[in-house]
Every structure is written in C-alpha cells, then in structure tokens.
Picture 1 (cartoon, each protein chain N blue to C red):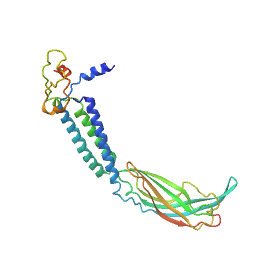
Picture 2 (cartoon, each protein chain N blue to C red):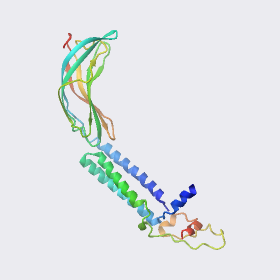
Picture 3 (cartoon, each protein chain N blue to C red):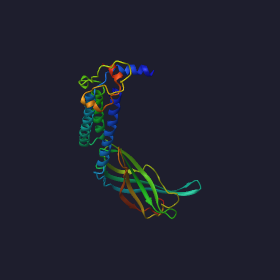
Picture 4 (spheres, rainbow over the protein chains, first blue to last red):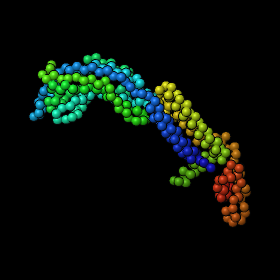
Length: 172
Length: 117
C-alpha cells in the first residue's frame, strides 16, 4: 500500500505534467496574436564629423529622432520583455552591409506600451569604420523589436524604415 | 540510521487500497480541473503568472488533501487470515484475503501482514 512519501512523489510528478501542459498551452496561444507595432520613425541629422581614431579617419554622426509606436498588441500574457532598437543600415565601398545600433529600449510587462518620442537623441554614436557616411545617399533607419516570451518562440520584427542622405560637408 | 527512519515512517498509518484509488482520483481531477480554470483566468487577465500561482495553490491544496493518511482513506482495511501453525511451511501459499480491489496486489507476505493485525 502506498506510503505518504509515495503519494508525495506521484503528486509532484503529476503536477509537473500539468505545468508542462499549461506551458504548451501558453506557447500555442502566443501564435494567436499579431504583434504589429506600426512604428513611425523620423530622423534628423545633428552632426557629422570625421575624427581620427588611432591612425584612421572615421565618420561619426549624431542623430535625433521622432518615434511613435504602439506596442500594446505585442505585449500579451506570455510576453516577458520586448527589446526595441533603432539601427542605421547603409552600404559602403568596403562593406555591403553596415548595421549600427543608435538607440535601444527594454519594454517590460507593465510599462506603458505606447512610445512617443520627440527630438530624442540617439544613445550611441553612429560610427563608421571609415569615411563611408560622408555623402552617403542611402542610410536607412529602421526600428527592430525582439519579443522575449515567458514560454515560446523568440520572434524578431522590424518596421518604420526611413531613408536619409548624409551631406558631403561637416554639419554641426 | 535506516532503521530509525523506517521506525519513524512506520508510525504513520498506511491507507488501504480503496483509499489509495480515492487519493489518486482526487488529485488527478482537482489538479486537471484547476489547471483548466487557471488557464482561463490567466487568459482573461492576460497574466500567465496568475495561471502559475493558481495551479501552485491547487497543488498545495492537493498535498494537504492527499498526503496525510486521513480517516476517509482507511475505511476498507485489509483483513488477513490468522497465521498457520507449523512455522514457515505453507507460508508461501496465498493466504491473505483482501477486499476485491486488492485482488491484483501481491499477497505473498502473510507473515508481515499478520503484524498489522
């Protein structure tokens, strides 16, 4: 006949099975949401300079941006954290793809999911590894967001693409 | 050390076969039902942690309900025949009679069973 310890064992094993079923259910429901933030990004160039970095001249740009994005459809019951970042992507002679993160934000459960920024300066300088920013006609700013769920897949999205062209001269 | 542990464990009365089935049925249905309710509540509140807290509460309740040998698990005690005279001879035959649910359980330990009487 079962002792109290055997009953504890059976009970805990069944509890783990129930938890697994709940986790799978939560994972499946995460596909029912359409995580679209419809971001609108507007970018202005504050400064473009060429500096000497060791023995190399590199371009550095500073930006401000306006951003409006609504992440309320991204935040659902299985969302733990949304990592939002703004990248500048451009092509140079040396590299076909350059991708630089200029700003980021971590949105947690309970935070205000509507982002509204005006004249927000970037967090990180936009450094090129050469002088590829100067006179670049096609620098694309885009907003990316990674959804980190409690249980489930780790989807990545992007939107709000905005093309800007950089001047040939220093701008202040 | 082992014998001390066993002596402590043996002070806890064991439940009978009917009680064993009742205990398993109880926690299976309570945990499954509360998981469905917890999932629905968590979905409505859009908070998966609420689902986890509710099912943890149900599991804690089941521990209290199922683990101690409550009297309602001991309503059908197993009755054994009196031990045969003449030492170990014939002790290996199936001598214990039990309630019908226990017919599939091993019944080749009459000497130990007699102790419980």
